[in-house]
Length: 225
Image (cartoon, rainbow, N blue to C red; front, side, top):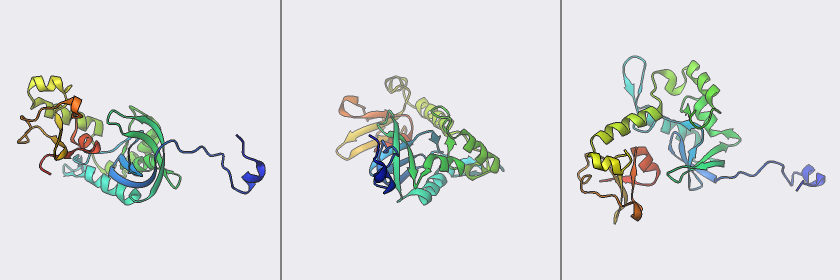
């Protein structure tokens, strides 16, 4: 219904559409995942280096670009108020959304400042911003960067190779065991002391993960922590 003209003049109504997703204070989980008002949000159209990921300096050395990106995202956005528009719900039951702080698109800011890549598999909205950041050598583009999706795939393949073939089939190729116990939700990596003894019962809410960061995002914690 259209607002009455006099109310519009008084600023008592707005033609701006209301946000369709969560709103509230931000907690930064990593470079592309945040909690907004307590809701877990995966930012749409961007993909940042994982916390455990390293990048090249351009001179042969490596640096912890994943941890650095998380720290930089926290400096910029942690504790601020965001409003989000939901795009989808992913397989980890996270809200996939575009979020903004004071009118600034968080995804756009991350890509423009060289803290994340345009996730072109899902959106081309930030392709030009990434190109500009690359050209200027901002953030992770100061050296050599492996696309996070390639890094995750290589890690999954390496983990899966160390797991017995039958377990790989049952897990769909993913190797991290998300176990529910009296201690809560715990994940076991290949090589952990209890990995071989841990059996996954999906009917009891247990699950397999393809990447350690995915397990953390879904609320599981590492065994022994």
